[in-house]
Image (cartoon, rainbow, N blue to C red; front, side, top):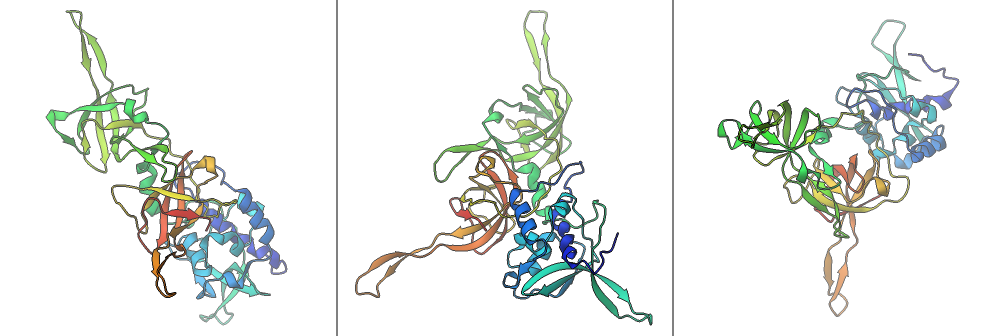
Length: 390
């Protein structure tokens, strides 16, 4: 840790790297945090400026002590009306984004307001010379190694289950995937630890996820098939491959492969399909607005629910080909109602303005579809609802 001299105030804001620390890995593997052109532009423009006071949350505190369980999104939300505008609050530059620092529980963050703008800085507590309890807060910068002890960018506990569960297949690949054909001792359904027997091409893989039959995901606007969403069932290990045994009578005896069910989200059944478990990558989730205007609609609510609320998952009808990235933040809109105006002498039908009522956070992106977590919402979200730039 190396303190920053007070004579160089323009660099205090550099600390922001902590937000890029959103970057604390979900899974351990080396990698480089993604930095979008928009992030680079914003951080270069405001590295020494901070955010206008008008963008601060109405009850923004003068300081905040980081607690275990805090996330960078939570902290930004304490100080800003729009938490995804973190680069402006922290005022970092390209080098700090490239080499992110972390913030830790116990550190004190100070909101410093100068010339109509505000920046967030680290403060260091120093006991008084008399050995009393008085604490003096002064802006400092902490440089720390990137490790797993820093706080996360968003509440990862909300999306981690879906990093395995929520899967979009670009085509109906599961239709020809290995399938479970029988259960141990004639069971109809299987649970953790049970044996299952399957047929198909396993391709040398031993670690599999189990899915129910995939269903097409339809674009609400164009009615095109965007991909195939399959309900996640659980995981299984291949413990013995199948074989075709030649018999003395010239016929062939088919022996299916044997798998052991590991984890189950719901009971495994005959006919369920197998797909190789993906290699777990380092995922860095840095909340940010899209660089260019982006809009679309909710294609589906994940699971069997008709509507979704806060902390639920929805599929969007936009993906990488449209410019969607992990970490993108979108605004949710509710369609304005139709009402009848009887105040002017004759009845006329009016369409009320659409109202913004929630925020989405994209955590997984495919070519034509994305999965997003509903961070906040006022009313139930349903397929067909639209989203735009935040």
